[in-house]
Amino acid sequence: MDSLVIIPTYNEKENIEKIIRKVFSIEFPFHILVVEDNSPDGTADIIKKLMQEFPEKLFIAERKGKLGLGTAYIHGFKWALERDYQYIFEMDADFSHNPNDLLRLHDACVKQGADLAIGSRYSNGVNVVNWPMSRVLMSYYGSSYVRLVTGVPIRDTTAGFKCYKRIVLENIDFSRIKHVGYGFQIEMKFNVYKLGFKIIEVPIIFTDRTEGTSKMSKGIFKEAILGVIGLKINSWFRKYEKLK
Picture 1 (spheres, rainbow, N blue to C red):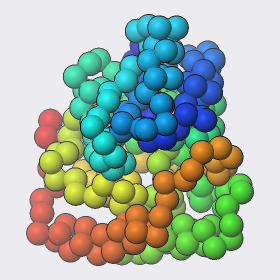
Picture 2: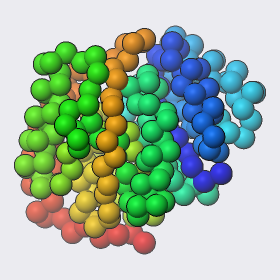
Picture 3: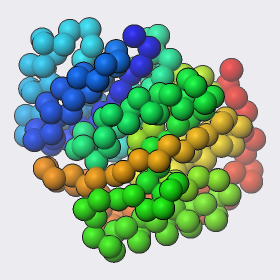
Picture 4: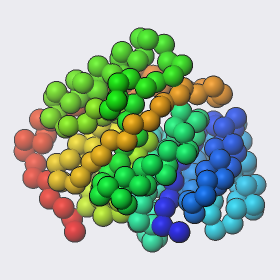
């Protein structure tokens, strides 16, 4: 029981039960932690009911409000590190990430030696389904821009489907992670790269949600793109050292 899937939620009543059941249907002993940001649609009630069906496998961390993607994951990371999980996953609740690919990310860490395995939309062409072309272009060239500015050799710099080895999260100072939206995904990858950990991109097919409402906005994207410049400048004055 060494693998924890962290799923942040805000108003995901249409998807949450289905994604939980799908993960638990995989023939691998995944545990799930849902970081729930006080959804007014009753998402938490659905999770708590399922916890009776999946005791010791399904957990919930309830927060007081919508506090941002980055802080949700950091909350989950700290929760995982307080326990004996060796592989910690990030995954969306809306089926844009195929739960079957959890096994491929796990294998990249266990069998290929990755410290961070990334479910990548762009490592093998462009593998995105049901996005308008404008959003595909924004995401693809946004990643190219991040790669150019930061020097991080990752094709999908904003990817949110990942598997970390425990040692990676143990060596990141979460108090220095400043971004809370999609910039968080870039900042975490930048830190992993600067600390010298091995990163492998695993090609996936990303399918846009069919139920519920997307949390993406122009403001979130703008934070990510503008934040990259600050991230690079700050790195000139900072020494990246492993905590352990």
